Length: 212
Image (cartoon, rainbow, N blue to C red; front, top):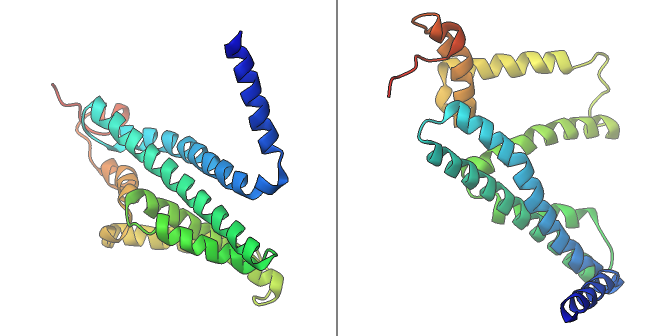
């Protein structure tokens, strides 16, 4: 019976610790690390699975390795960033005795430089994803604050027009400037559809099946 009693005592101690207000900031950093790791794995694994089996050649073992590596890298980096960001936020608030908007910006800048400053495929995708979101957000904020006049008409159609016009122009004439995964997707859509040999690679497969 010592085993169950020990577990109960341990759980009681841990749960009691989690309720202590003086440890809340430090515990929030730890949970942030946990949430970063879980969220990174959740969103990267399905994406890596689809992209790898659609566009990557090689054996099943190689493909699974690539999926695991991408998932691990995304999960690790997001966990490290959340840990760094929340830790620096808590430290600044502790030093200055209050929370300021500059704390969030400075903590995220340092975390971004340390964690997402390495120029690799995963970090590139994450940073570009965020860039598109903050451009939208800053545009809305500019309108809210009065720095940008309120549009008389919905600007989204013009936005869509320019985005698609520019990206296809770049793809057709300067494809090397685009991210590799975007190049692969566009090759599949726009260039692979120009080539076929018979009904098998016209409707069933994208490319002719090679015999083993």
